Image (cartoon, rainbow, N blue to C red; front, top):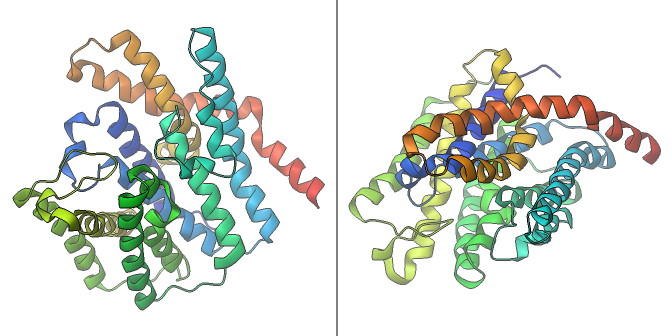
Length: 336
């Protein structure tokens, strides 16, 4: 398949937003109510997942192994390392890091695992299995995308109210619109000329909740921020804002990235996003034990360099040594 530069740009940019939001995001996390800007990085990844799955014609078994082997392999590796490191320093076993590997059991709990970013492993497993089991033949239309967005808003608000914000966030339904947007784009030729109004609509979707946040402040809760002035309707109102920001910003990123060419640096960072995603929070915790007393501005640059490009270099080295691609190929061969 022809390499599409926008995929690397969206993955690398998304990973940058996630890492920045975690390690120095205190300066900007509150600027995108009712979400935190790092969540847009996850939305970019779900869009790319939908795009590439829509073009994957391999048998179901091969799709599952190709998509899940490495993320489970890396997740298990760092779960074991986290347990060993914690026990060696007098801590607990950090057993919650294994829940995402148990078919995403973490999604049923109203908190993140000890290594918080590993929640995504469980959600990703759900997305892949549901795609293979029930959604491979779906062809999203504009009407379907609107209907799904409405359902997404209601389900998110309902889960947020009854089960907790973390469950509403981790459930695959929180990301359904951006995933189907990716499927929608993936089912069209690479040279498709999208109407200018789609960009305008996406821009409006981004501006609306941000403008609302300027006149009616949202609270500071995580992972979603409620519009306190809306009272009992706050979960629904905020949920609308979440979907608008996810979909609007993701579409704008897709259209912008589609105009960019290939970059070796971006392709390198894109190729290592799994390692960065799983490892950057443990590294951040360790680094904060050393430089946590530094002023925020002084520690921002070393934290970003070490937790993003630094981990990318480590990830490339680990892949050369552990060779998960070869282990995956052997598993596929055994499965026939």
